[in-house]
Length: 193
Image 1 (cartoon, helix red, strand yellow):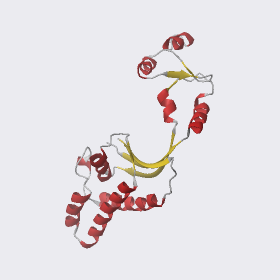
Image 2 (tube, rainbow, N blue to C red):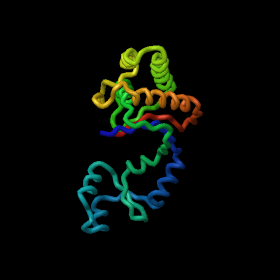
Image 3 (tube, helix red, strand yellow):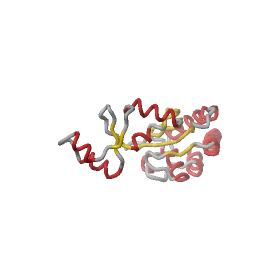
Image 4 (tube, rainbow, N blue to C red):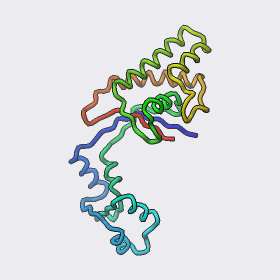
């Protein structure tokens, strides 16, 4: 089972930029197309996929002959760039599941409060680890940044991967704190499993 986790910079394009990127992807002469029009211009090519799209979306086409939905255009409103990546860092996923009820492919905006909370939890465990036995540190970690709850509980232990994840997260938190975001930018956490 996979778990890929990302902290990304999410840029929200302004209305003019959004229109321009839609034109560059789909063409400039965009118009709503009915299912009947599609069947007439593409005889025999209507598929179950297209029929299902029509049930849930308005569909559009352009001079390029591309068929696309309102959702396709909406997705172009945002530009994402990866800031941090984690693979199977279950404790981080549990944190977001328990505190923010994140689902697969959902997003949580990484507010300064979230970053501060994560930094506090991680630094407390790493500091504790310096002066205590592994067994006591595992117990402390399970109370402060658990990995034994949630969907992925069966796959993680308080082992070297857990502590490597904490060290990597602390390094990344320091990078996040240095970011200077504009009003149309946000730092987000998302996952895919």
